[in-house]
Length: 130
Ligand code: FES
Image (cartoon, rainbow, N blue to C red; front, side, top):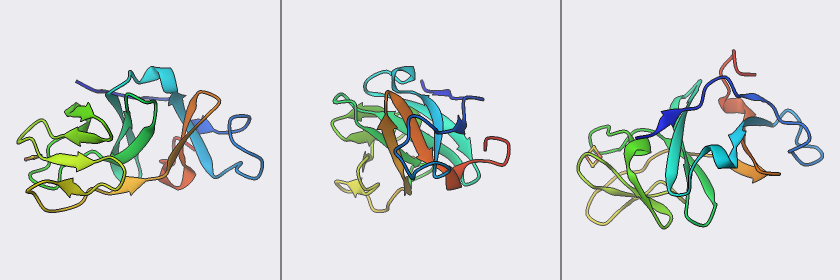
């Protein structure tokens, strides 16, 4: 089961590249998410699942399956995809598209890792998190 990252959002400074200040928000250390795991952050657009894959890539998707709303953060991460815990639809972490038989797409969001920190697009931040 995933957990929620709380009160760790702060403006990215040293971790972001030059010229990026204000564009990225530092939400957590990469090691706060285990490989093949996920955490949830609350944003102004709703809950977003942050996934870490086996090869330490990080992806951010809406935490809602396009089938019947299952929490993707509770799903099984494999390769660069996640299997929904409710009815096993497989969602690409790279583009949010449903793979296999289902139809639909999950919203994806900008996320990056710098100096061991996970950064999300600052425009997702809630008023309290900025
Ligand atoms: S809610 Fe995700 S597969 Fe049904």
